[in-house]
Amino acid sequence: MLAQRVQPNETTVPMLSCVAPEETLAFWRALGFDVTYEQTKPYLYLAFRWSGFELHYGRASSGVDPSLENTGGCLVMVDAVAPYHEAFTGAMRRAYGKVLAKGLPRITRYRPGASRFTVVDPSGNSIIFIQRDEPKELDYGGAKHLQGLARVLDNARILREFKNDDRAAFRALSSGLRRHGNSASAVEQAVALAILIELSTVLDESERAPEWGTRLRDLVLTVEERRQAESAVTDPTVLEPWLPDTA
Image (cartoon, rainbow, N blue to C red; front, side):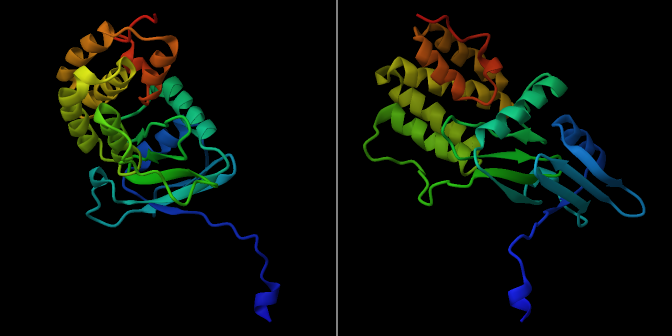
């Protein structure tokens, strides 16, 4: 029977829609991918390889709007996601002088211990890197034992990491800091302020960053608390003007 001759060694290669060929080539090359096939006429076909996986692109249907970020995407299952995030953010700093955390293309932040992150390409495709042993029951926040600003931070984490809704996280943190900031610990305030500083840049509301930066500078933090604030953002360099000296 045919089924008896089929071997479980298949390889699938995602075919993604591309509306920005030159930008796509430049982006993946900047991240260290090899271009294994490049053709734009008479039809578009691009192929990239990095480590053990490939990404292929064809022309998108007419009317596709990359800014909606619903073009398509794929999952990349890996043993550990942190090394991938480190490799890509390092490549971005070398190529662009910063981590691309807003607009297209960009990379989402990686929280230490998290099991996934996303790279959004110039065409609005989401390439999601997921740890193979990611728990089936994910922690979606809303822990009942958390109170005050700690609970707000927990909900903002879910909005950012799983729902990719930076605007909702921004609103939740702004409101939560007003309500609970005075009663929160220094490290909770520092983490909330750090995230707000980053999100204000991502959401083109950078005029609000100095207010939060001044509050962050005035906090007295230990080395560990400073590390927690830095790990709350995609690119810690956005905090350099305001992150206080350690106690």
